Length: 240
Image 1 (cartoon, rainbow, N blue to C red):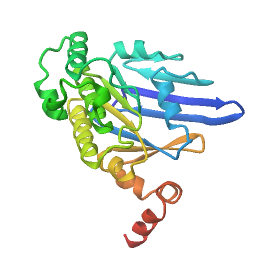
Image 2 (cartoon, rainbow, N blue to C red):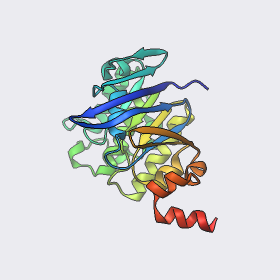
Image 3 (cartoon, helix red, strand yellow):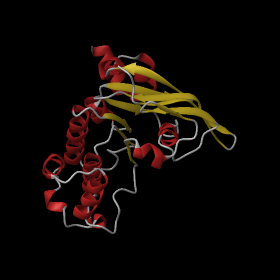
Image 4 (cartoon, one colour):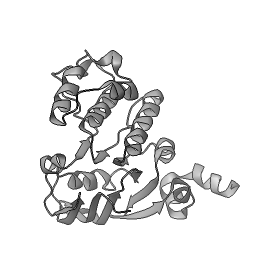
């Protein structure tokens, strides 16, 4: 299977500190791939370069059959990329309904019943986003992604700071998008949630990335278990 989105060989410096030396991340159609790593390992930098929100010293993005040395979000978005940052979505001055209608017009989509049902936002349609909880805002952002009908969805730490019920809902939404053929890429630290939702794990550490494979293969990877998952995972491996 050919990846639809690849961020390849990225090198990123912050002053005298090199965060990424040669890091990559790829998303495949119909699957959920998760980027994991410690705070400061460079996960967000890798994704933000990939979607065109940050420059890097080196690296290239391949998306939908084209290559970009200096990717720009508005260019990638026109070709079917939807980026969900860890803040800033949705817009605060339009109701949820108005935002869905706006995105729907851009993608020539008129019926939102399935989207509203899948994301569980029927009771939020007349609300302004500033009145919503963090989990509700994430579900609205996912509804906007659905309305855009993306080729690829990249979500940076979507589970951060939300209730378990909302997290379960987000996982169902990401899985529904993948079922429709969307390539889904996620990042975060919520180990159990991410491992349960993922088809493939990429580990960002020491400036580079490692393709660990399925969640089961990731859990059994000694260095990932020792250096990232911690003691609980080590005990699980010994018991297994």
